[in-house]
Amino acid sequence: MELHISYELNNDGKTYIRNKMFEFNSMHFPDRLKGRYQEVNLFLKTADGQIVGGLLGEICWNWMEIHYLFVEEAFRKFGYGNKLLAESEKIAKEKGCDFIKLDTLSFQALDFYKKLGFEVYGTIQNAGGYTHSYLKKDM
Image 1 (cartoon, helix red, strand yellow):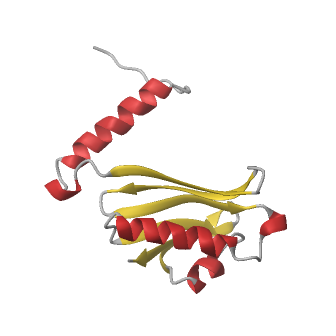
Image 2: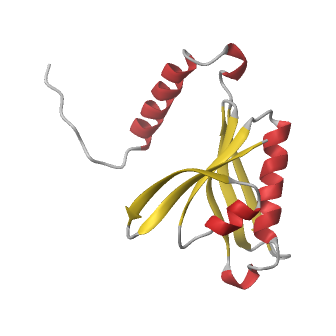
């Protein structure tokens, strides 16, 4: 049998690969952590329901990973980023996570995360001309 590689948008294929990876990984994690997966979606909304920011992440095994944290420019410097992260930490603690991890580019929010207790555990230089930092905060 000869196989070929296809480059395409394919939600069924994406789900298959993700599920197979979770299945494989689950064979190596302790039973108490198996099946632990939950999306974490926090939205910052105006009184009329318009989304002006938010935090998107997931809980997987014993950690939370934050993929995106964004606040519209007009609402920055009012502490909403802090509040979104504080809420994510509350959820992580309630769900028994040992740490939160995230990444940021040097023009984004490195100092913001460090001020809130995140520590850099790795960097990649020249990521589009910037430094890509990986951070972690123990719970």
